[in-house]
Length: 120
Image 1: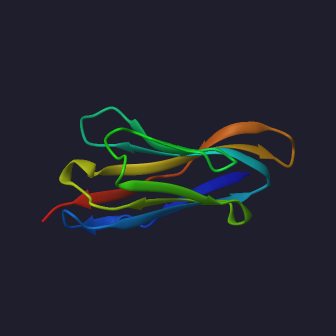
Image 2 (image 1 turned 90 degrees about the vertical axis):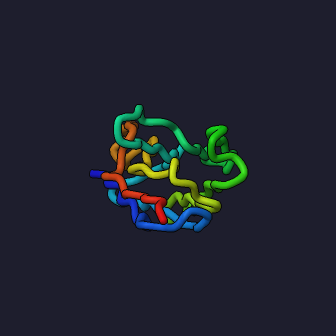
């Protein structure tokens, strides 16, 4: 069994910052790509940021220069540092990861999501 748990969401004023964390636990052999998605009410889910096992990162155009994705492989954790937040960043943020278990099964696992609300 593998579980992903996000934390760090909340209410923040425009221009503020939040740091999201997503920790994987369970029978993990290897974690490959780790990603952050978000879904705002009435909108499609979108990929916000992605990071490879080697640390190469990519971002959606809407968050470039404001968000930074990073990972700690020893802790099986991916982070999303969000600065200069805007009301349009309001969404449920979820992480996913491609994980090979100790039973040599590889799947994509999702966390439950954490709400980020940017409002004055």
